[in-house]
Image 1: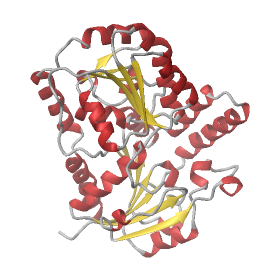
Image 2 (image 1 turned 60 degrees about the horizontal axis):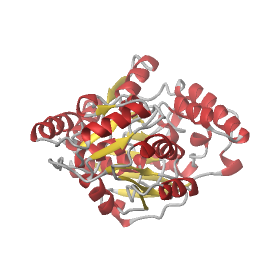
Image 3 (image 1 turned 180 degrees about the horizontal axis):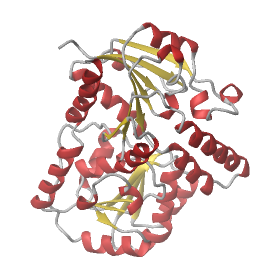
Image 4 (image 1 turned 60 degrees about the vertical axis):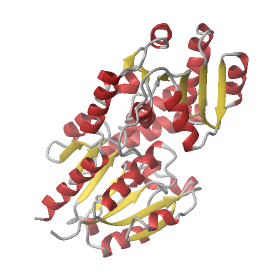
Length: 379
């Protein structure tokens, strides 16, 4: 059978794979390339540097400036979509007659374009974006930002209904899959879990040394979770060491961490240090208050860590409840920490988790599902 060839349009330069969206895109490219696919990669750029790493995995790599500021605004299109349009991109998509994978709603400006009408088109669904922006708006303090986020949510909700020319939607979470199945009942809509750096699990047994929260602390969602732990959980567990680790913590996070002797802040750890922190922890404590998509920090903790304590929002659409400890309030989290800090992580726990991760989150298997779909469409 001939080699599968297709375009991937990425919302950002996906390497280094150092945040959720980039991780999924980069390791998808890597897995598909290793499976023998020929990839034409298109990247919008706005602050991240070009890299030779992508050239080694793809047939061609092209870059396009994102149209930020006023040039990205429209009364008809969401900003995240309209700011990622480029005539040269459309020309290249038209010239190379192979299927197209749009990485997120963000990149789908040309999905309905007449020049691509007969092309097989796949949408990778990272979030129900209008819900995500609505949740951001509800928590935003600035009136100006709140108005922008609500407007973006309104435009996204209408736009999501308009993508009638896609052939398939592959969703990160089970919950998002159900949403798009209702939105596009005549299209192929399936759950394909996020791609990630792990070829196998490396889960330690026995006892770890501390509790850990990790994430990009500059992101409002992660800052909210860290502040919740610092204000409502960490003060009540003074006999347990707690580490907060991540990129670019705010002055408020720094001040609160300094307030407690049993709490340590590790700023901007590299990938090796972060993996070490996750592996040596007794408990990875990972609440979130943003119910959307799939949080890749959860996968990192499950592949490399011992006990994991999460709330229902973190588990949203993952199918991973059976290998996590669920706590939704500060009191419940404190109780789970008190119980698990003295509880060995056993071989049986490790085997159950490894089995579940292999069943749903294997990169090679999920890459083959994309390839099989494209092969069937080409028959």
